[in-house]
Image 1 (cartoon, helix red, strand yellow):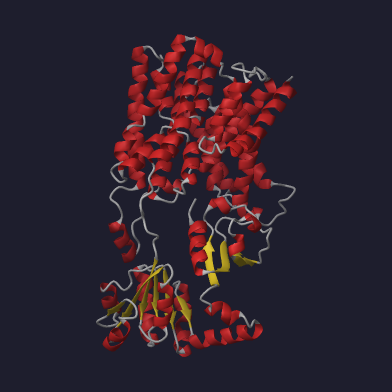
Image 2 (tube, rainbow, N blue to C red; image 1 turned 90 degrees about the horizontal axis):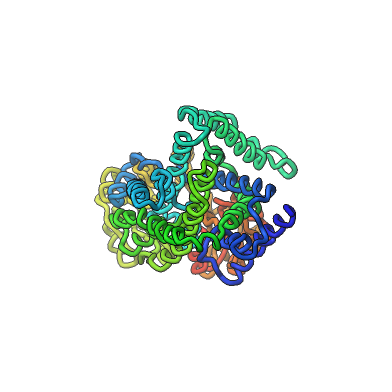
Length: 619
């Protein structure tokens, strides 16, 4: 019978996403749909699966452990870092222009409001007789489903934007804080409670494991991985080591799993390792946990109890009210509709509620009816939260930010280059210290007249306030001085021209160590002529106005772990090289793309602009 029940669950886990794809139910989180499927398979309707099944119970417990491990790996600790003190004048100027309220400030303030309101709601539940334990109610009300929030933000391509970062950090706090609060709660009120200081042993063990395996992935590069799968073995070792330690000191095993996920995240695993772990978790263990959670809900019993019918809407209202203050805090930076969208998606919660209820039931501090009411209300938040987010969210009308390029030196060499770049996605400004050149070229392209070429005066006239500065003056000594000044000022890319090879030979090492890109026209001409002899179409490729060479760094996770032939725009571009891990790769149609791959491709300027924007989105 155990095997039949497991087969039914696995069949449902296979069919559910297929049906969702056919019916286009992408608006609902998969976890919510799997819980609903579990309700249908359990005593609520078909009664073909029972939670008393020992095999399923074991797999379900492993599922919640793996879910918390993957949740720990989702935490982006860079979001918690404070704004760095600007190291260069250009960075300091950019910091002054940044909005007053940072994502970290907004998120922390928002979550503090969630904790305060949840605490008030917990005591209201106790005073009204809805739920007798105010501390457990507070922990449940202040949970947020990080997985649902991430999926929703990814769909809108928002993770790299301030609004997405703020909402993501609120959700991260909505998993981290309740988890530690639950651990403290169980240590104080649990039957097997032990001294709280013993919880420090979990983090001490995590630190030891982190230090021990810190060089792991460097070593992992040099060994045969196909049959050993050492990275996956390491993940399971971390999980069960910290779960066992957490259980031994009286903490909850989900804390150990969550901390193991954090350790794995800090070890900086490769993208393919993350993909395989996601495959193991979301492909097998986690769906069983979600479906068994639904099986545990007996709607016939719950809905026949008038007291439970009152609890479901009451708990749902509490989930929503606990996040209401987020709206007013987000309004400090974002407009009304987006603040409302952020508050509504932050109200979605289910994964941590399941974890909390599992612990609560083991402590016998929550009844089956109360647990079912908490869970059904949480499911409603996950259904209505993403729906409301998509209704309210209104992307700000923003123009594509062009890269700002400043040319210092207006002449017959730099002006044509600037004119061609200005037609695409670059904001071009020319600077010259010669009045005659200014009068000649100002009508051709935006040009500013410099008083002189002293680095201090050039800086004062904001000629270095750009993403890229090109020193195209004929005077090599001036280019050398200005290049060093621009790099010291904080310009990301500085390109310096040196016609005098003697000047370049004496200073090239110094400039390249500073990160300055240098070139010599005769050397470039020699290389071009050689390429033209060996590959006659080279010149046509570089000078064509219809098709030319471009480069983009792949940051959009939607296209990672995907073969080139599967890319939707593969027929519009030709990828000639992939630069990965300091090596060039000659791609084929079956080559799998990785995060941070630098793709060198040819296409039309219009197509290249679209592809660079699509692949370059941090998602």
